Image (cartoon, rainbow, N blue to C red; front, side, top):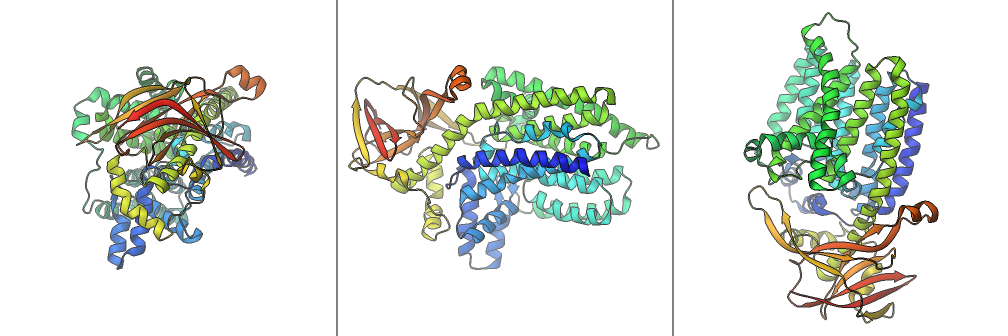
Length: 560
């Protein structure tokens, strides 16, 4: 117990640093399909009957029935009086702490010194999977389902009536947090079978069958799912499965061809040893029940099986997309979770003589990954924070989420407007609103005829299994524009001003080490043109100095 407490206090300290830093990049405006959580609360508030409210609650979101993410959103709204995405987002990040806590419960059984546990929080509490920092629904589903699955497997692997009956509630929450949870129920049933708990297995089988029937009642396939097309390309299917496990490599290289190869290799390096060690335990447990085995493996087998099924499902539903399938940033946390699982599996299985060497190597590796995560991803977090500020401005002033597709804006228009009208959504930051009109004393305007932005026409493809959409877009780059913490690109016309967030560049490593200068000069960004009314737009760069916004108008224009 003393070891467990020491290891967990270390984890709690690292998590506190993780949260204190990341809350600076959470913003009170929804991102992407966070809208579906907002829509549920808005529609449920106006529902006239229990039947209508229940229908809204169990309605499918792609392939998933997200009852508990919706209920958590409703709870957040009820407590604060409106959906404050910043607060809600920060709270949802506590799922990472929950995952670390369950790993810590397993670590206690290893009877090792607390320092051996250090690689686990170092792997978990870093922002390489940066989309899961500000994308609330992704955290609630992608990270949340891992937590609930681990908790379920932990309860099942520790036989007691109290734990077993608690697992029914956890299994229900897991299933209706993310559709993959159904397979968590199956794995829990297999754990009971392997453990010889026949009576418990019968009860669990009835429960599982009931949830399957409820889940698939009036079920429909998700819009991005195309299993038949994925099955036609077995090589792509296998590559997608492995890159899911090794998706951390994508964040290190960020080049499609190189990333695919390295990510697949990294995935294989995680999957193969786990398959060998845990597969061997499973083989002897099932086929040679009289063999003396260490049943601490059972929890690890369940965790590995769950992520293996999850990766297979992602491959089946997404491999048709092509080379980038399975490499979505929101999946990257699974790769680090798997690395932590591999480390604990090796700690359990290798001879004691090598445990210390493994622990030291793991700490050095995890520390390097953690350090790289903060170095590489703070740029992304800053960009997204500014993007949320810009989009809140664009919606208040122009009525659109500028970087989303016209179809998305059309679909959300009525419900989003209603959510603000009824105070379900609320703006809490109006600082940028002075940029609505350039005739404002808080603005200074300059003209620069020498600065030239790099403007490259591109195409943005919105993936859909049945009807992919191509949108006209532009890549913009400023090679050496001086860094300012508050910098935006503006498209200015006589009638409208649109703000676009920019991604800053890294400063030199010498400046970082000796001057503490993280950001360098220059920036780049992209935007689509589908939401722009016809007209002529002038490019401008917005920067804030103290309390005054400076707008630099350029001699470059965009005709729509």
